[in-house]
Amino acid sequence: MQRNFALDCFRALAIMLVFTGHTINSLGSPQALAPLQFGGTGVDLFFVLSGWLIGNQLLIEQQKFGNIDISRFWIRRWMRTLPAYYAVLTLTILQQYLTKDTFDFPWAYLFFLQNYQANLDIFYVSWSLSVEEQFYLFIAPLLVVGFKFGHKTLITVLLILLLSPSLFRSLELFNSLKETHVRLDCCAMGVLLAYIKSTQVKMWQNVLRYIHLLFYFSIALYAFYYIARYYPEWHVIEPSKLQLAIIFGMWVIWADCKMRSNKHRLDLIVMHISTRSYAMYLLHVDALAITSHLMDKNYMFTYYIIALSITLILSEVMYRVIEMPFINARKKFSFSRARQQIEKVPYRENYTHG
Image (cartoon, rainbow, N blue to C red; front, top):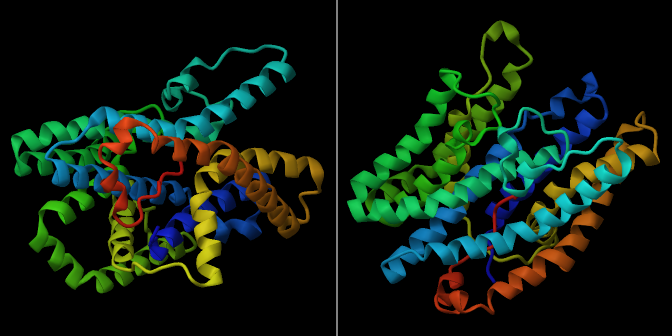
């Protein structure tokens, strides 16, 4: 299967940003490592990539067959994301049950509602998986209904999805910034870009004409926000999620133009991290916990390398034992065979971290 190296790079970058940020937190957030803390933007990059993938899959299906099979989409998504998630959740629940004096069963985690809880006492990285799964539930039906009312209606709805989280945040209509309705900017941006590529050919061609300029400008803007954190006299506030959605959206468009095969060693390393990124996301917190019991945190670089090594080993096991069997099993079902040619478009591998 031909893969897009640039998209693989961004997916690998996203998981490494998440891993590095949580490792620094595990070390007690020492001031010396502050420049390596990117404020959780790795998850936002994952959300844009996820929206782009899901949008492309659904829109290609609409173009080829004139409709979207919602149940097929849901089942294939669930077969891709749920087995590994529930495996980690089961181990987490067992650990809590065996080690805690009091134990309340985390029912919300079974239904991906934990991001609306006040506290995430266990498996705290799973909040973003809740956003993803809730997003999967409504995006396919939304596109189906939207196509019935025409392109103008659909693009208006996608723009509302993109802009409404900013309104909710400004009005403080949330209890936590982990709640889905205030974190949909990046997912919506990915779908919106996929929609423009699929249906607005002239607009997409105009964007591509300037994409290199837009890409380098977005990198410069991201770097500016990063540097501004160290110069409070500049009075520059942190970028909003909408701003990050736009920046990362430019990265995804640029990457989509950079299709090439994986022939070099660097390509293979990046692809390896990219394809294991979901497992790495699920397991890296446990790897950090194991590392903290194995060694002194004063040796920060060694701590980082050991934690990363444990994460890679655990994720490799999960990828081969749990993820791959279910990925392969999807092809054996009739709902998958019926539209098998959809999978032949370049780079259909799941982009989600969850």
